[in-house]
Length: 363
Image (tube, rainbow, N blue to C red; front, side, top):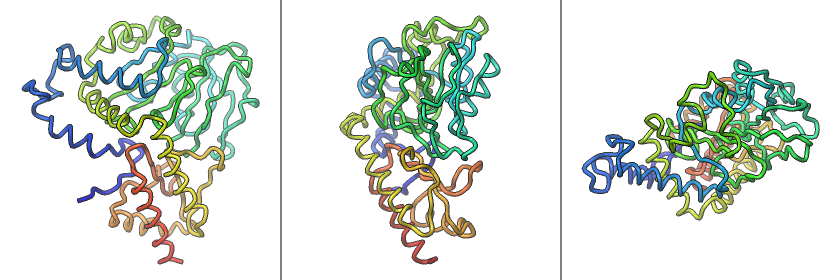
């Protein structure tokens, strides 16, 4: 029996075979007599899980040796504070505000350092991305922050900006929560990237931080020890008890991604899914997407019914068809299909088929 297709924006769908393996190992991991959530994070059993997860993710992300990979907690919202605590030195940080999440990042950072909005698309309803050539960067920002994929608003940088080409030597900080592992990353342009695992990498509870070595020793004196990137790196993410079960599940996802053919194969599948769904929306007389086509997200597809009185009927019909979690974020309304790595092409085909039949019924 096939499970329903879950289009939640996060916590999001997980690969079936990952969940099946976790269920099989729930009471006894590899003959250890313990489930993973019962293990000491300093024991040899969890040490093996942790080391394999680190190695697999470094391989998947093609991460250069001069970057540390940290497993932390608190999600992207906590990182909005942890980043300025570690990188700002109390100096101005620049923000490109392209949606709800980068807006939250700027607001939170302002608690710890001057936060300068170098560009914003709020006036146009966060449906576009500003050309980097138009950014009004500070003279010497401590860092420049972007959200590479806005989960709520459905806009995505398909190529990361090159700050050096703009004459800026500051590190680029990227919130890549909702596109990590969905496409390759050009690490030559990045100083730090962070993201919650609960969209493409695993369950809620694990936060991924990728940070360049030269940025590890900048923390403000008030930065809590457990949140200091240098301390976390020096202790291999074990300074405090890490989210062990979330790391274990994420490690299973990493192995699943490798079996799919790695990031290149995953990206090709994600392009196919997004192309199919956007084509159905654009050809429709009932549905519309308001984002500029060149910056549409491959991961989060917001769309609206031109007749919003049909919203409840659409959601009820979708649920009956085994298509779950399609209601848009409360701040923007409408619908949203999050089509992360674990959503197969067949799931998007099922969604498109339902959308077309619903439109035919209500023409």
